[in-house]
Image 1 (cartoon, rainbow, N blue to C red):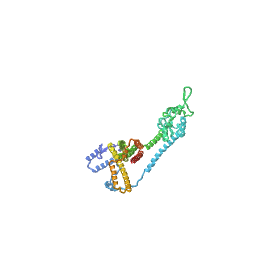
Image 2 (cartoon, rainbow, N blue to C red):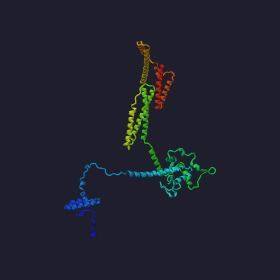
Image 3 (tube, helix red, strand yellow):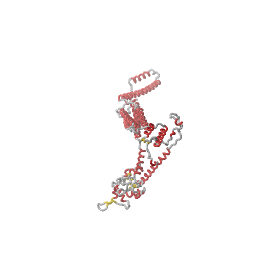
Image 4 (cartoon, one colour):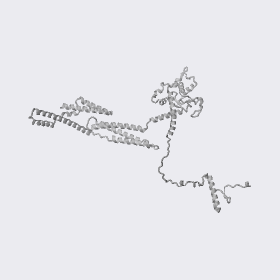
Length: 508
C-alpha cells in the first residue's frame, strides 16, 4: 500500500502540503497563513539554514566556532606598541646557492674546455687532402656509427640519398646537412691561440680549388674524380661537390658545440671590452694632461713676456692660449656627454652608484676648468709689450751705468790714496779733481756699451749663436718639447750675460 503512494517533491508546506517553486515563497506563505505556532516557524528556518549550508558546503564549520575563540584574541588591538624586536636566528644560503651555481658553470666550462682541446688537436698537423683529413678527424674524435642513428636528433627527419648523414668534428654526433654549423679555420685558431693567429697562414697558398687536386685526366679531353679504395670515398667526393662552406677551410659542427664556443667568445669579449664611460673618461684625462703641459709652457712664456724679454714671441703665446681654450672646451663637452649617458633610456635610466659616478666625473671636470684653465693670466698687448721691452732696455742701461760709476769711483779712490802718499800738500787739489770728474760724468759721460744690448748688424759669432738659439727655441715650442726649451733658454741667458760682460770690458 505504501508503494502506491505518490512521492511529492519540491518546496512543500508541512501543514497544507502545497508545493511552492522557491524557498522565499514557502517562507512567506508560512509566515502569513501558519503564523500561529512560532515553534514550527523556528524549526522551519533552522531546516532551511542547514540545507543552505549543506549545499554551500559550510556545514563543516561549527556554529559555536566564534564562541570558542580565546577572549584575548578578540580583544587584541593593532594599536599596541610592542617596542623594538630582537632579530632571531638567521641562516645564510649564499654558500648553498654559490655551490649550485659553480657546479652548473663548471659543467659548462668543462665541456667547453674539452671542445677547445679537441679543436686544438684537430688544427695540429691538419692534412690538406680531404680523405686524409677525414682520417685525421676520426682519430682525434670518436664518431658515432651511422647505423645507430635513423633520424636527425635536431629536426627528427629521416636520412636518405638526398639527406645524407654528417658528423660533428668535436663531439662525433650524427646530424643532417641543414642542422649543421660551420666554423672557419681562422676563427678556430683564434679560439685556441689568439695571439699567434696569422690570416695568411690559414689562407690557401694556391689559387686552385681543393676539388681540382682530386681531378685527374682520364683520356683525351675527359676528366673524372679520383676515388680512394675506402668505402666512404664516394661520400667524401660528394661532400666536396655539395658542401656550401668548402671542405678545406671550415669545420662542420653541431648546434650544441657551436653554441658553447660562441658563448665562450661572447663572454671573453664582454670581459675584455670596456664600457663607453671608460673610453670617454680616458679621452678626457688625455685632454687634461695636454692642457697641463700647455699651461706649464704658457706660464713660462707669460713670465718672460711680462718682463719684456725677447726669448719668446708674443704671437706664439697667443696661439698657445687659443689651444688651451680649445682643450678646455673638449674637456667640458666630454664631461657633459658622460653625465648624459643613459638618460635617454626611459625604461632603465642610470641610478645609484652609476648616476653618482657620472655626477662626480662632471664635478671634477668643472673643478679642473675653474681652478686651472680659467685662472690663466692674460697676455699683454703689442703696445704694452713694446713698452715693457723699452723699460727693460732702460733698466739694463741704468744698471750698466751704475756699475761703471762704481768702477770710476773705485779708480778715483785709488788715485786719491796715491796722491796722499806722494804729495802731502795736494789735499786741496784732490776735491777739485773729484768735482771735475763728477761734473764730467753728470754732463753726459754715459757708457758706450749700452748700444750692445740691442743686436747689431755686424757679424759677431756670439750674436749668431744667440740668434740660432732663438730659432731652436721656436722649433722646440712648435713641437712642444718643453725640456729642450728650458735648456735652450738657460744657454741663451748665459750667452747674453757673457756678451754684456765682454762689451763692458771692451768699453772700459
